[in-house]
Image 1 (tube, rainbow, N blue to C red):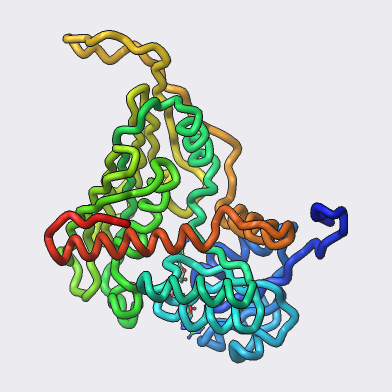
Image 2: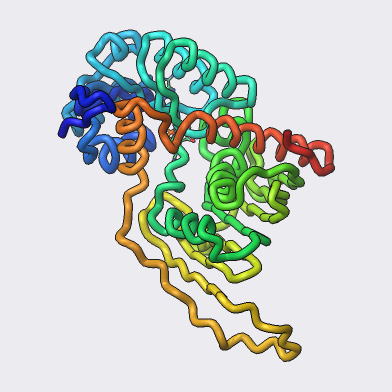
Length: 357
Ligand SMILES: NC(=O)c1ccc[n+]([C@@H]2O[C@H](COP(=O)([O-])OP(=O)(O)OC[C@H]3O[C@@H](n4cnc5c(N)ncnc54)[C@H](O)[C@@H]3O)[C@@H](O)[C@H]2O)c1
């Protein structure tokens, strides 16, 4: 498929992708469900520091196994998907940008605001596109919830809750379990998705209060975090995110409330393309009901055709490059996420509310 630009000139129709850190989420999700399925992307070469694993991934997906990043960057690629551990994103993103490759970086963009800013700066200087892997924004139900909110169906936004937890026991060498390597624990890793979604729905957060703890597991990163966010528009939200609650016991709840209704979801936050979502919308403002009867409004099931979020993020980033426009999953969401996360950790450390500029 060829995509014309504004001048009607035919652009390159498919972008050639390389991958750094091929053995983790890249192999589990982004390569098979995203890059391999995209009509705008072709997987060319992969690199992982684990050479044996990299050979296996390369043969699984018919790609060239590179033995070093230099070699990967010399192969015929336009974009690099960076799916290495968080502490390596800065080095890997900058190396790729300097080699004039577009960079699609997994979240978090870096370990800190400074690292994220450096990545943004170098990509701008090298004139390459930078995207960040907050793929949950693309879930079909989340897109519909966003449209309902944008159309004012919830009225004035009041309160949101986003939850993402899993069971993550101590594992020898696991980078997420050491804040020096992961930037944090459950909050940085999974809470970042929750905060990102709340920003999509509610806009800019301006203040944050946060508690973190390592309650159950014996590692350095937090296994527990609760965040309270205050938004520019007056809405408030909470995020609860744990590495110490069994998978099946946490339903990854999303709740969005406004003065005219709510959108309540179970299981839409996560890696799957599914989940349940119901909207309760009350067009007509009723008077005060002292009896608080709750039967009047029937929920509306939000059940669109599922969208694979890994495919959607790859498509959007590839198309943005081909069409020479900013992608929805741009650097800004990665940078903003880093700012809010830094404010959360600061609040937890100081035991105070922290303002966000
Ligand atoms: N959006 C999502 O759904 C999602 C899910 C999981 C992880 N992630 C993100 O993806 C990134 C990777 O997480 P993961 O779960 O795949 O981790 P992982 O540890 O499972 O996999 C990381 C891979 O990187 C490789 N690696 C380590 N050091 C390397 C180096 N110096 N050079 C090249 N490769 C190296 C490892 O060998 C491993 O194969 C993180 O940023 C994480 O936050 C996103």
